[in-house]
Length: 157
Image 1 (cartoon, rainbow, N blue to C red):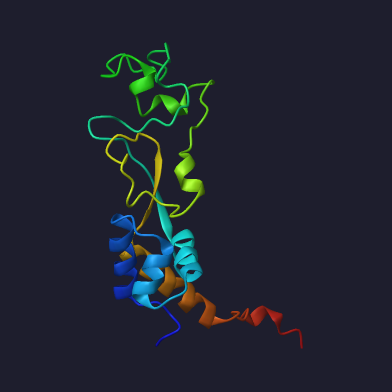
Image 2 (image 1 turned 135 degrees about the vertical axis):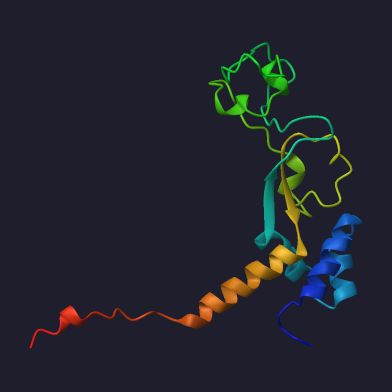
């Protein structure tokens, strides 16, 4: 058995996370320790600022009671209230980002979350293909070593 994780194992992790399986269960199925699975997910997640179905991304903690409007300065804005807008977070002096508390504990990603269709906060996902690409990039960079500085102007004599 290889020490390194393969793309097919990463795909299995992604599928099992969508099924809300625990790291222990995933580890058992893949023949890996649960801490290995946990580290894999925490090191290779991606973040997305995406809204919910029919709602724009808005991570402001006070978005539901917000009375502000048109902070973006666009009077043609389809969103009359900033609490529903995905741009106003950038302009509001009162903006405080709300972060989902579920991301602080396992599985640390939104892959199997039941609230995904309703959530307008920043999301984290484990995507096997991107995790594999990141792993391959880091592995290749680690093997290149230190590059020597080459310059002909250093010949003093």
